[in-house]
Amino acid sequence: METSAVSDQNPTKIQIFILSGQSNMAGRGGVVRHPDNSKQWDGVVPLECRPDPSILRLNAHLQWEPAHDPLHTDIDTKTCGVCPGMPFANAVRQRVGGVLGLVPCAVGATAIKEWARGEDLYENMIKRAKESAKGNHSDIKALLWYQGESDALTKDDAEAYRVNMEKFIDNVREDLQLPSLPIIQVALASGDERYIETVREAQKGINLPNVVCVDAKGFPLQEDNMHLTTGAQVQLGHMLADAYLSHFVAATTAPTPI
Image (cartoon, rainbow, N blue to C red; front, side, top):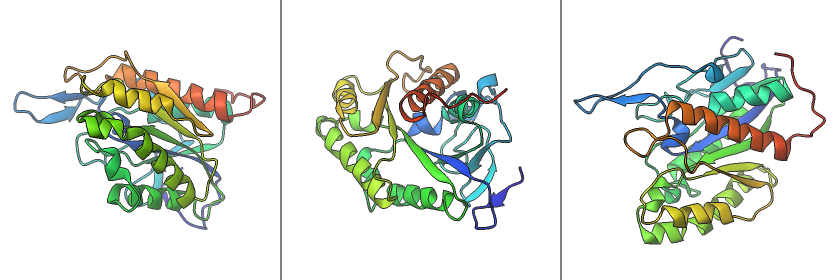
């Protein structure tokens, strides 16, 4: 499928998934730090992350294009590598068929307060989400959210996380006019050991309709002890897909031939 702007001239119905949060959603799988402290992606693309003509990404210019890692290359200014988006999309498309559209919005080293309504990150995410579904009869199917490492740095931020996250969910649903939008969030795999469990308990304790939490605790980390390895990103993508398919897709949906 050729690159095309989101417009009324695009008749394809796209099943849209928003990818948002901070660095582990933006993807640092395979990012290598060199002795001079520069960082570079190793370019390794696992089979589970392979491109497919039915999987698109919305680029920074609000155009659909074939999706491939690094999905966040023009969204997060830091060096990006493999994220959970492609393994998620490949797993989901085998069940639901059709065209999937990924809307990358994640930015590394960002706290939940930077994703509050009115802040640049939040407003850009909402803009991208709205544009992705404009004029092409497409549906926003879910928001995949992995964030919180920055909020594990202080006691006050960690203790405020649940309230801030619930407000974030309410605002996103209101601003997208999708009151039942599925939210699949990831409980942290890494973070400051003093307050990571406070944030994790907040993430697992959110009790709102159509909000599911998957737990990344124990996933393999890179040498920085913060970012998921490429293999862990693939594992997370499959876990997110399982959560979406089991909670939000009818069991009678026929698998798509591979």
